[in-house]
Amino acid sequence: MYEEIQSTFARLRGALHDFNLIWPDHVVSGMVWRLPLLTEQRTPDTIQVERLVGQEAVAATQMALVEFERDIGQAAGTVMRLPGYFAVSKSLLERIRQINGLKDEVATAIEKLRIELNLVPAARPRLMRRALGAKFNTKQLLRHIQCFEGTPRLITFTWAGHTTATGKVSTAKVRETLQASAEARASREGLQLEETPEFLELRTLVNMADTEMLTQRKSVAPHPRAMLWFTEESRYDAMIHANLPLFIKAGGNGMEVRELKNFDRYARQAKRPDEKRRIEVLPNRDLFLSSRRKETEDITANKVDEANVASTYRNTEY
Image (cartoon, rainbow, N blue to C red; front, side, top):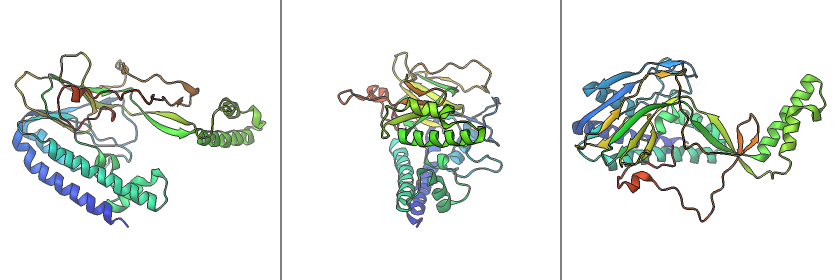
């Protein structure tokens, strides 16, 4: 039942082993920041980062690239992160694309098994752990390595404190949830069904079709990110989650690196200036109308491609 997942993972592990034997020989410069593992499912108010350079940074990265299981004491639902960068003298793009492709094949094998067993999407991590091991971490396994075939003029490492994740939920599902909540409250508090706040929210959705898809927004825990500038424009050309060190081409143009600082929840953190504006459907439930792109509207250009830099980056992923 789990053979396809296991065999694809074996190929991924072999590709990463070969990659770890090769890339350190081409490092010209680089640094990473070690973050403490989280022992509970919440981000502490402050996080101290440890700066690593030289062979220590290389060794930490070699371990991070193949670390798919939770460490001792690491809370379930948290991930190990090692933000940083390496400038290399030889192109690693095709090897990294191959590795990322194998990660996608593992994800596809897991999804294929889920559909065959007629399980809900939330069952994917459970299937992955049954196939590979009880401590395997889905995000650590499937996250991509980022590589840019160019030398940025500036890399900035920061903490993203206001990032949100979005998903889709049908109006029918929202109605079902509100109806159940309204009935439970009415029974618990001795109210008429029509008097509950949830019933009033149901009335708000009266003109919406059951098939209408809403955007559901959830806050994401603060995490390190990296922004790269290749051109002289003021807006960054790429922004990535700094889960693992990124690889760039070494160059002689005096690249500037703004290093990752310690995280402080109480320090002022600016929200992203390009955050999408959405129409709220139900107050305080983080449910919004889905934005609709006109069929004739062009997809937003990838600025890395415009800068003539081959990469693993897709600006729709962030």
